[in-house]
Length: 146
Picture 1 (cartoon, rainbow, N blue to C red):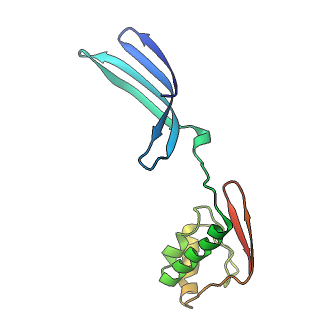
Picture 2: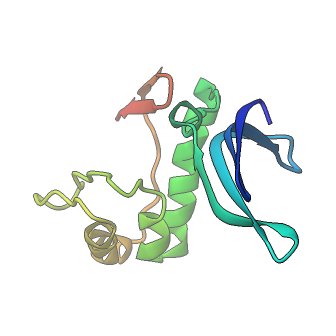
């Protein structure tokens, strides 16, 4: 518990504040919490418990290098090699937009993206970056080129 405030009433108590969990991999997460306890049958019991991530704790971007960004293309190319449109579509974010190579119709959903790759994969594509420019932001990376 990093900070908290306790109130005590007649056969009830409330503890609310901020706590932190440390996981086996060493990562940590902070959350708001509240517990309301009632004295029931000779024991203190939880009557209410609420816990929610701190908004500023939800996104913890991991630093990425330009080499790592370029290697993400390799993961996408590997997905193409499986011939499975669902595996390729799984490389895209839930709200991704695909402006495809062999179609004039933009794809805005995971199903739409997978649908495009059904026919694209029939051609057994193997991608190769000829030239590119990588830009990195606080929680995004862009690799654009030919």
